[in-house]
Image 1 (tube, rainbow, N blue to C red):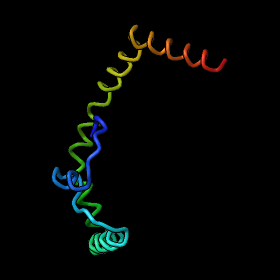
Image 2: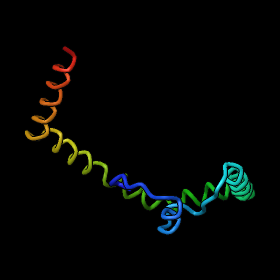
Image 3: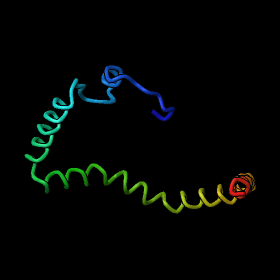
Image 4: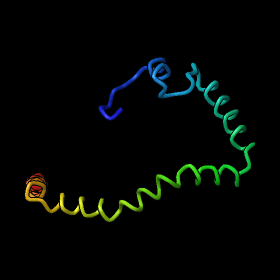
Length: 98
């Protein structure tokens, strides 16, 4: 996906990118409505607690790494190479306006 590869519906199904393939808009709407009914049958508080529990470890890791991530980002943006690229880009924008 990061390369922008386009998959047919059947290819997407085969590689697990989608759960189901339908042939008509009506089938898609009916399937979506049934899926929504199933989701809504689960009490909201239970769904919320489950999502929070599942995400907590990852969120904690992100929060703990934030200072280091910020420093790496700043170091990268302030590097001569990146600053030169930004300057070239801005100069090209100024030239395009004329």
